[in-house]
Image 1: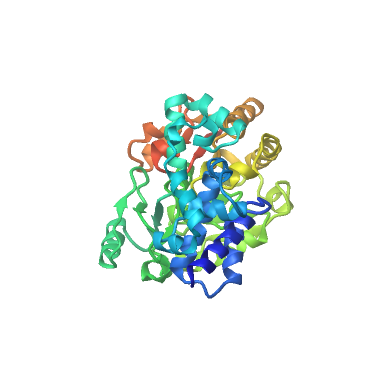
Image 2: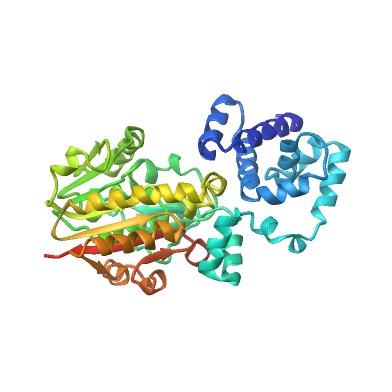
Length: 421
């Protein structure tokens, strides 16, 4: 495609994602479905430029004020992530001179908000939790992309075997530092074409998400519920932990999300999983299982602010009001999920949020209202399930707290309780 046309398309995509009226990944996917003639390298340039704009929106908008022409075109030029010669051939002489001047500006002299590119309410919360030095370390991490983590399906293969096959395919990998199932790949190879993937030997899953499944301690022959299963990443991990025995219920209010589980389930070789759409957390399907379940994982609907490396639009689409509304929903779901447990059963509450309001505050309120639920130290659970250096993952309260800059995972939180026997 001619450079001018490619920059025009990038400008159009930037315009669409900056509407912030839908998740950026869905907007990008829809855009590519409309422009099927784009090659893989062109798609990469468009998508990565759009995400770069979202990551550093305030900075690029500030620098763009000195340019001319459509704002979205100036943003696309500043954030361009494709081959340099493409941009060079697409710009006018005036644009090239303006970009050169913009690139000479010392970013360290700019205001804090132009350096961290976060809304005030979010930056204030993170700085309060981490302190100034660590806050900037987190900002730097969030400004980049996330690595690609795989979970080995232990029903079908071993981690060492998978890594050998990846090496044969020319893909470099390393073990994840914490999860005994995890493999980390840098770059974005076409995994979907590999027999390892199509045969269900591996699933794409962030290491932090793998640790959430491990916190349940799910075992052979048990009855387990993944309460907010979504597309089923943790469901599949739980099924493997159970060695394809017992009964594993995958509940979700979205039939669309559960539909995405089906092909993954077919690849996995699991036959103990029972996906089921529910209307809400008080659905009759849940009432019928009350007091019968050994383990319940509640990966609750949340702000998703722990996934900003993958979903940078969320920092602009979420708000304190949205977090407050989510907190009410999280508490309701957690209370309903607890009713499923038999005496001695385990409950894990988790989010992919960095906000205490969705994490420690919800867990504290639940503990206060449920004296029959005994808090469990996440470190002990993780160590029993083969997690190395688990102490580095857990807060003084015994809760799992994962930070992108500390642990190279998405941001996750989890609290664990056992019901009195």
